[in-house]
Image (cartoon, rainbow over all chains, first blue to last red):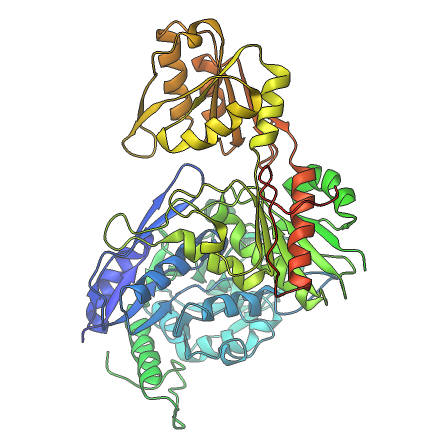
Length: 318
Length: 318
C-alpha cells in the first residue's frame, strides 16, 4: 500500500517535494497549542495498514519531543504497520559523554527516546563529534544523508574562484572532500571556544584567500559566533567578503542577521531546517534514504550491502 | 540510606520545605538552556544506592518532558536504586479519548511516557475528567494528594460568611465536600465553553450570594476565562467581590491580571505551580504521599490498605 508522509506544520514545504519522490500520500500533522503549553496533535488520515513516515526537524528538540511521540503513537493506534522518522536535523548529537560530574549524556538518551517511538530514522549529516556512526547510537535502521556532494554542486555553480574554509580542525576531512569535488583549494580555521556564545578564530595565511572568494563551510550555525569571528578575521586579512555555506540553519536569536552584518556576501543553507537562507534541497536524498530504511525494516536481517561513498546510502531510484 | 530530593530550578522554594519533611537530602537539578533550544541537565549529587525523588511541576509539559527524562535517566546512571516523580501539577490529564478523528489521546500517552522513566508518581488533584483514578492511567505506584481539606481550612480561616461556587456541574461533588468541611452553603455555576478561550457562565439565584462572600473554586485557572465570566456575572447579580480559590495556578499569559481586573477580591492558589498567588502549602501532603509511594515500591506486592478519606492517602507521619 502507498506509504504516508506526515509532516509537522513547518515542514509542509519540504514534504510537498518529498512525498512524490517517496511515492507517498501526504497527511499533514495538526499541532494545536493550548494556552497552558500543552499540545493537541492530530493525524487525521487513513494510515491503517500503511507505512508512515513522520517528517519533523529537531531544532528546538525539547518543544518537539512530546508532540512527536504523540504523533507516532497515534499513527500506530490508527493501524500503521510501521512508523519512521525523517528528521533532516537531528539535534542532541553533541553531548556524547559526561564533560562534568552529573551531566546528562543527552545524545544516547535522545536516541533511546526516539527508538521507543520509531521503527527507522533518516537524518542529514548529524553533528556527531566523537560518535563515528549513527549505528553506535541507534539499533533501529538509521540512515545518514551525506550533503557534501550537494554543497560542492552549489559552490561550483555559484562561486567564482572559491577557496573553502572549514570551521575547525575536526572539519578537515569533510572540507577536503567538498573541495576535491569542487576542484578548489581549502584551509581550516583554528577555533577556541569559551562558553556557548564566545569563540575566537584565527585565519591561516594562504595567498589564495586574497585573490579568490572565501567560502566558509559549517555544519551548524547556532549562535553564529564562529562565522561572525571568521568573517571579521578574513576582512582583517584582506580577503573579499566570504560566502557562508551551512548545512543546518539552526540560527538562534539574531544569528542570521549578525552574520550578514559582519560582512558575509551571502549565507546559503540546506532545507533541513526551514529558513529564508535555504538554497540546497535535500528532498531527493531524503526520499532515497527513507526508501532504503523502510526496505531494511521489511527485509531484516540485512545482507551486507555496498554503500554509495557519495551519499552514504545504497544506490536507489529517485 | 537517606533519599535525595532533586528539584527542577523553579521548584527550589517548595523543595526546601519538602526535603526536611521527607527526611531527604536536597540536590537541585541544573538546567542550562542552549541558544538552539537544547538543554543540558545536571544532577551533581551522590545518589548511588539512594532513592531519588525528582520534583518538577508539569505546567508547560512539552518543554519539561525531555529534560525530565534526562534527569531521571542520569539519576539511574549514577546509581540511584529508584527514581520517583513528584509533579504537584501533572498536565495532559484532559485528553482521555479521541474527541475528533486522528487526535492523539495524550493523557495515557503522557502517562506511558512518565512510566518509562519513573518508578512512582505523586501529584495533587489531577484534572481527571473521565478517568476516575490515577490507577487507570498508571501501573507504577501513583498517589494523588487531595487538597480539599487545605482549601477548606484556608477558606474557614480567611473568609467571612463564605458561599462556595463550583465552576461547573462536574465539580458539584468536590465543591460540596469543601463546603461541608467549611460548614457553609455552596452552588455550582453553569458553564458553556466554545474553544480554548471562550466560555459563558450563568450564576444560580441564591440569596446567600448577596449577603455573604462568594468564593469561586476551580481546580485549574488556565486562560482565566471561567473565573472572569463568573466574576462579571456575580457582579451583575449584585454579589460582593468574590474570592477565587484555585488549586493549580496555570495562568496562561495575562490570565492572573485579567481575573484581578474583572473584580476578584483576592486570588489564592496552592503552591503546586510557583506563582505570586500561592498561599496554600502542599509540602506536608506531598511528603506523606512520596513516603507512601516509596514504601509501596519497596514492599510490593501491596496488601489491601485503608485510605484516609480526607487525603486519599494511607495515614502516615508528617
